[in-house]
Image (cartoon, rainbow, N blue to C red; front, side):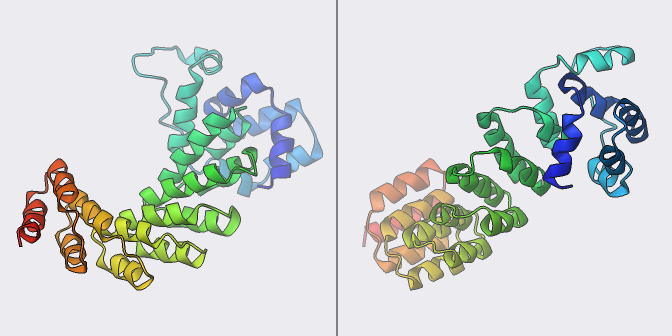
Length: 277
């Protein structure tokens, strides 16, 4: 659904009725009721569209419940949904992937920021496409954090969308996070976009134990073996730690502290064996 149609549609709904309408009525009841209230040709065409209804109701709302321990009579639903905690409703909508009600809510920027990062982790591209235009178009930081949250849970379709449509991003930082997750495909994607923080990539690859990422960063010129050793120790990555030690990492004490902190005794023992040579 285009932004133009969305704006038309929501301009016809009283704000205090929006949420209960979506949660209380069936699609047909809602269409019939609203068409009677506002018999506009464009509005009618939108509401008679099967594609619109399939998109709007594609996720199951039959299990919607009020907060735990809240008892409310069926006939009171319309009233209570206008006064229930906004945080609860926002969380419910974002958890279940409802882009349409979220679009209609007049959310402050910091709440939008939180919602966008949350839904990126869940892979809800529809919500990102719908809500991101409401954010400051000059704010590259939030767009980078949305992408990073998608990286954290392997939502590569979100990462691809952000790179293709919302750049420039902080490609170096995104690459580091992808390396920490061991995702070489996203690492390569960020390199293609111009990421050059090869030592960050090396450290991330050491933490995840992804030898392919480590070798890629070494080939590109990464050389901070000491920090990579500490990250390998923190991640409990024996082979990555050994590789950094063989490359000449010598900050043994810091790496041993990292290994002990993360309770990786075998890695700590490996580092001590090099320290005692």
